[in-house]
Length: 145
Image (cartoon, rainbow, N blue to C red):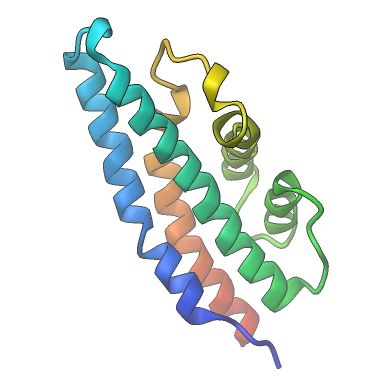
């Protein structure tokens, strides 16, 4: 029998609409804010990207612990395992791979992080996160049958 930490998975999945809304608001505000006044938008963007990475990888780790019985060796490996186990498909995995590759820059190299544009993932994430939010419970249901 699997031990699925539903509480922790649900807590993180319930945070996804906040991330989606943040991405949408950032994209809207970016267009109407002069480039000379975008510092807070840059920082909000970085935090949104970082929180999205943590949310996806936390849920992924919880699923791996519950079902897959193997350890992920990196953030990229979490994404690969979830794709291989059919939690989501390759187009979603591709976006998530690009996302987790930002983690080191956002978490460790923040002092030298380039702040000049709206990151393209901000526009892509709402749709991908909505798919992920629905895919995780569907995966759990399939596995527990």
